[in-house]
Image (tube, rainbow, N blue to C red; front, side, top):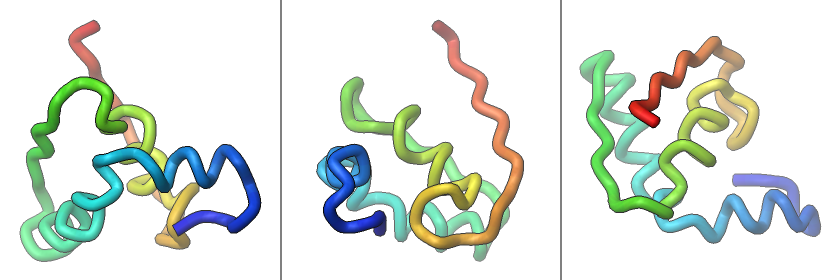
Length: 70
């Protein structure tokens, strides 16, 4: 998913939410909407916006708006 040998990229690849990313992308492609529910600390706000924006994982570059209740 990321550049081998880059410690930051390797840290992103170790986040538990990484396993849900393919299903999330499929749901967005198929339905245009998806809900991702996962416990705190799994990487939802760290990895998922980067993948959706196309900054990690080689997808198309897109704008992503992240709204958090914090």
